Amino acid sequence: MKKSIILLSCVILFSVTVMTSCLKVKDPVPQTVLKVGLVGGIAGFNDAGFNHAILAGLQQIAYDFPILCQARETPTSADFEKNINYFIANGYNLIITSSYDAAQATIAAATANPKTDFIILDYSMASPPANLLCAVFDVDQSSFPCGFLAAYWAFKQNQSNPVAGFVAGVDIPEIRQFSVSYTHGVAYFDSIYQKSVGVLGYFATSFNDSLQGVRLADSLLKQNVSTIFAFGGITGNGALYKVKEAGKYAMGVDVDQFYSIPAVGPVLLTSCMKGLGNMTYGLVRSFYFNHFSGGTIVHGTLDNGGVGIAPFHNFNSQIPDSIKLALSDVISGIKNGTIKTGWPQ
Image (cartoon, rainbow, N blue to C red; front, side):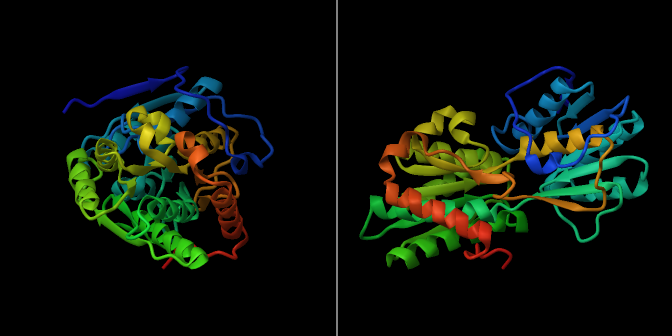
């Protein structure tokens, strides 16, 4: 497969609001020359979610600052090492990767090249090398209220046998963080309103198989599931299309998929969002101004805008004020620690 290379100098996809937590540092003198390389995830930059959002953040920083940025597609796992080595060989100051697929190659490269700095998004480790910064998203904080809303909507659709469902990506901790907290959100709805909403879900074997997403969603729909939360990359996108075809209801992930996949917008209650573009922008901006917290882990949370839930769009008028208020209370409770999301287990 031909490798796609994207040069970013003054290209912009959409505006990015910089995450405030990344900017609480007095800006010193910026670096005079800065080259930033982005190694894309296997699902590709056209995934209408995770990878696309990271690329958009990099495109925005390349537009706003005199930074030379380049992004390279990663068709297979073997290409992570190749792409990282390309940026090292070409003297890039900062290399950005993402997720568990890229972790082994990123850690190995950071260890072997202490003069090159690295950021890995959506992955954490106990003790990162001094030149590697891990950025993670506390998605349990946003998936929990999505579960609460899904439970309400499932009950609204079928009071005699309400079932909320999910189609997940590969069964890894970063994905279970969604499923566990989503399930706890459903249970919290049950406890508040004395209901009994069931939860069914499947984990996929790939993030890049839309047909598998279709099959998994179809199986859930045949088991009376009316509301499906899809968090599995392109596989999850396939599930969204199946839900749309069936005339049922869904929730998106990573970005507001009402906009990123307009075709499924009419059935989306909300999306469980990560501030991927914001985080990318903010961390590169900090690096540009000579502030890099290598060897540490930064978190995107409800408090700093790193995670959140999207607007209800077409369903705003159909969700009663009492449920909106309850969701607001849930979010406040998660922020102040009085409501536990169930993660970590």
